[in-house]
Image (cartoon, rainbow, N blue to C red; front, side):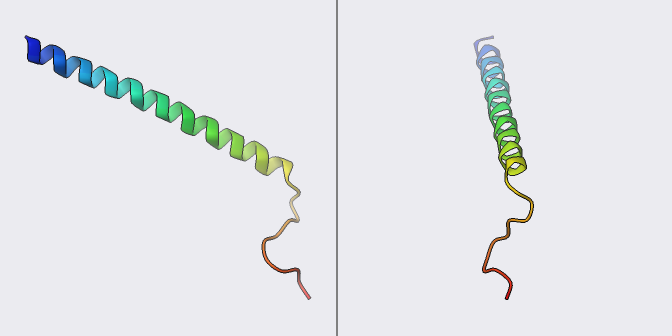
Length: 50
């Protein structure tokens, strides 16, 4: 019985950590999209064309 509780708590903790990480990744992606939308479209990396 004790081993089953340990397994249950471990799985529950893993699910909670997964949800926390997934939420942070989603927020980071939304933030990157917001920043990209604010930048002008004609911006290019590298030297300007001759």
